[in-house]
Length: 136
Image 1: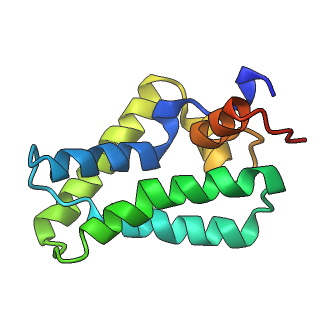
Image 2: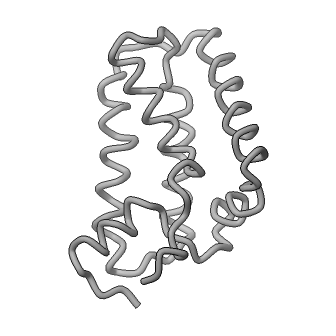
C-alpha cells in the first residue's frame, strides 16, 4: 500500500461528526450531533450493502463503525433531536463543504462517497498498515 491510497483525514465527514460528539460529551457545545450520526449510520448501511469490501478491510471497517457511530449513538440514546440541532447540523455540513472547497477536495470526496474512488478511509488504511495485513 502506498500513502496516496488513503483519503485525507480531514475529508472524512464521519471524523468531523465524531469530533462534534466529543465536544458535546465534554459539554463544550449544546448542539446534539445525533441527527448526523443517524444519517452517517444509514449511509454506512447502504455502503455495506453496495460496496464489496475486501476481506482484509472488514475488521478495521467494523471497528471504525463501532467507534465513530455506534458508541456515540448509544451514548446519545436518551437525548432528543431538537429543531436547533437540525439547524446546527445543516450549518456544520456547510462548514464541512466550505472546508472541502477551500482545500480543493470536493471532487475527491465526491468520488470517495459515491464509491468511485479507490482511496481507503484513514482508519482502515493505517490499521492494515500497522498490523502488516496483506490487502490486495
